[in-house]
Amino acid sequence: MSCDDRIDAIRDLAAGGEATTELLAHLETCAVCRRRLEEDRATLARLDEALAAEINAAPQANATPWLAVAAALVLAVVGWWALRPGPVIDTELPSIAEWRSPTSGLLETPNQELLEETPSFGGYDFFERR
Amino acid sequence: MATLATEIMSDWPADDRRTFEARVAEQRARLYRIALAVLRDPGEAEDVAQDALVRACRRRSALREIERFDAWIGRIVYRLALNRWRQRSRRQVRETAWAAPRPVETDGERVATQRVLVGEILDAVDRLPEKLRVALRLAAVEGLDSIAIGEILDVPPATVRSRIHLARKKLLETLA
Image (cartoon, rainbow over all chains, first blue to last red; front, side, top):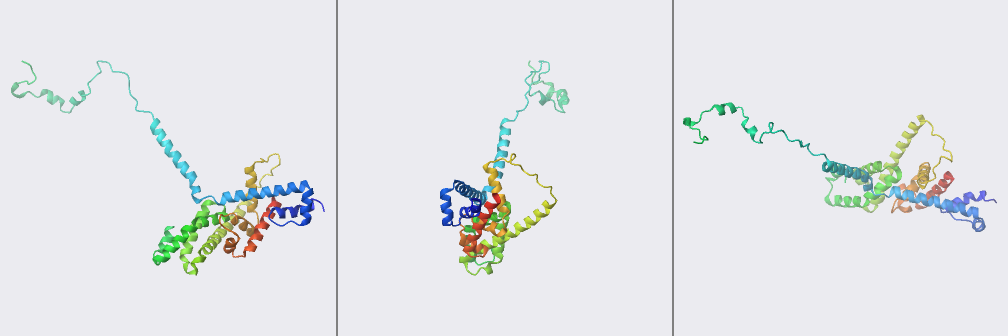
């Protein structure tokens, strides 16, 4: 019986079956068949690991990408808020002729002319120094 | 628990409801894993696990002994998942019948990484006959032994072990 004739029995052994005395004796002496058996066992070990990892992940683990996306969005918004450009401040000073006091606009009311034309009480100008 | 299941249980005696809820809470992760083992899709597995809870609530009278609850609800979720898997497979067959054939990959182009190999192994599992595939994947669910799998599949534990053994051997043949 050649090594190729034993492939099926080696797979059977790797998959958890029982070996015949003849196969065990052959494995003692044949490095090729021993390596084949080790490779088959390694493949099945990878299978077990892959299946366990895929199936036994907690249901909550599926939410992780969404949590990560949500967290990234929050960080992006906060970062943008912290680093956003401030209001544009005009640092150039107006010339003296253009300058007006901050309160000068208060006089610009619809009745400004009327106020200017209103005579003082009794012809007495309160503000006039005598 | 799902809102629909809560509605169904609203007219149950308080004791029954508490017992049922406690058992479901214990089994929730296991039910999801059974569905995931069959379906390979977390979203669909969640749907099926929820659907199973609702059906279990509706068919409470079918459960004669509460001690059998785990196997009973396990079988419900398994059957629902299997139905969905079959529907999906039929759909895929129809869709791929019209798709262009995949180019043949040569050895030189093959990236021999662990990741690719694991992907190949899992794809090979999907191509196994249904009975072997299901037994193999259920055996990977934490806490399920051949007795529990046998209860879900409605076969003796020895049959489960035999199917798992055959599945592993067939997989080695496929990957050789």
